[in-house]
Length: 259
Image (cartoon, rainbow, N blue to C red):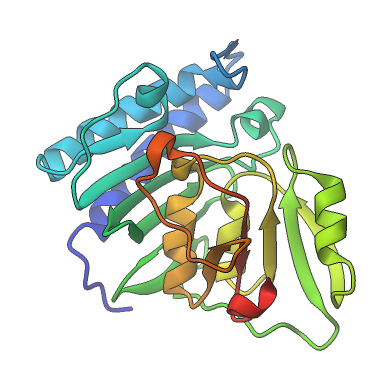
């Protein structure tokens, strides 16, 4: 697959470095603390973020970095046309449960759109990447290969839902009358990547998310031919005040018709 983006290989490498660090901690009896918003945080979140932030600062000193733990500590940079969004451990609850469904997310935003992203699931040995002009790919035990969203199968859509978050009643209402084959529950930004890989078709999200939770997966999905839109049908944008997302629907080739 052609690589037209100068940062893509570099952030793949950073995500893999962070993945090795996270897996070293995963193998220990790590402690879990609560943040101000009551979400969990571990040593893995903090050390992975420090590694990624240092790497991005060395790679592109002029691009601001918005990172989850940094924002929680009050470190919010002034944003320009381009900025990084970093979630050093998306799915901390899955990390704590030790089910493997956690990811390391690095995204580049330009003009309020995620133009480049890498999502690494170190426990599952899968790394997803992609961006504008570069297409989308997955790396696993079989090497690197191109991925694309699929058309919804005749037997119906495979719908993804959050394993640890979300609103079951809202999901049921949204899916009423739709041709659905099954609903699968999965943790972290893996859901967006499974859409990109043609392993599922629709991910409606009615629970709270932050920009760093989904930007990298959004970039991969868009590069694979999919979309992320709000409930009014507008493309999801980044750099919002407070970095909180509205409810959204991510989909493969069904696009806007999903809403």
